[in-house]
Image (cartoon, rainbow, N blue to C red; front, side, top):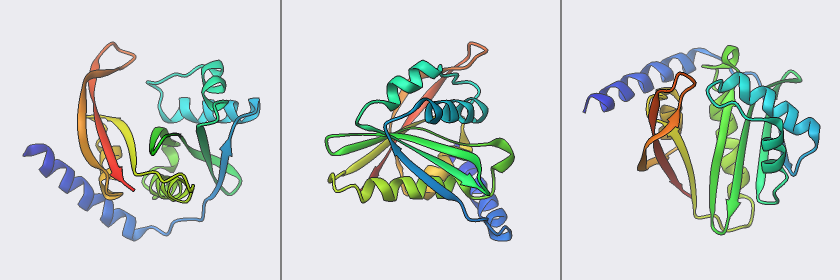
Length: 178
């Protein structure tokens, strides 16, 4: 019950802050496949946005070169400020990673990236029925983002994430009916 109270309070505060801000328009690059420049851009963004999850350039290039993997790069005034990586398999999609630069957070950019990604998945003509993602249980900002997009809790992976300090954190599996 206490996590519900915390989430409700966080949602209220976030909504109040969002009402006071006018969001600058973002532009989106949707990419299937990769060149070294795309992988390098996403690696740079990923490492700045999610420092506990350091991906190598080679692992990103390998993942992004798969036909089923797509990426989104969000720009504001020609500056890359966020990204999303997702994959499609059969009638499901998985959001692998999403992030916004720290100095660009709390401006609605993650919401816009997520909405555009869901729209792109829905418009893919691949009959996607569910979209899944995983999020660290202590990442309340991300959980709030996903709840506001109508994702629901679908399960838990115990001690799934390992922080750089060695601490292990549960992953909450969330799903969205498409």
